[in-house]
Length: 203
Image (cartoon, rainbow, N blue to C red; front, side):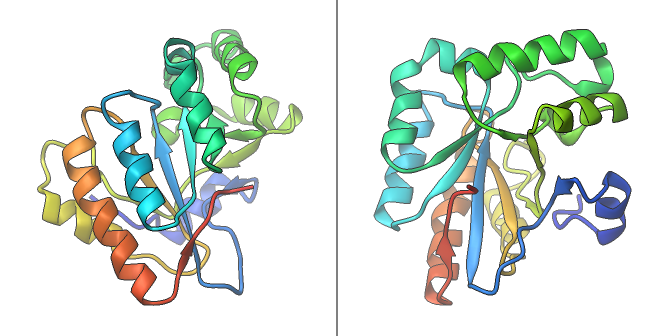
């Protein structure tokens, strides 16, 4: 598992896909996929609040539909949100029309110009259409692999401690990722805060 995305993969994806946000400041961009989930997301919010950190939550539209009050809390607490499709579709396994309909459904609930494709996979045509609709395609610099049952909490943390200024780290506020994510998140915040980093939402 390669946790830090190699430069050649970023080049293949194209400059329209954002893996890193250039900055002269000591800033890290925390992102969470697949929520909001009532069993997990509030725990994430509590940790972020304790560390005065802001994040971007790429929400599954169906979860927004099921938990609108929790979605509102994300915004009320100063975090940002992004579209992660309505039903967490894998772009390369979904027809163009079905994929775009799913994105539209989610956009009705999540009014954001930020978009992250589930699994990080979309076709060239899907990508072009999303850009045409003025979405920013946000990927990641570092992935924690918090959702993997094959790794320990310590390995998840090790995956996450490879960050530089302007990097985007990917966690998941999901039941599957909960144990590893909560362990790593707290320690990432402590480690980089001590080095003078701030944690900001993507705007």
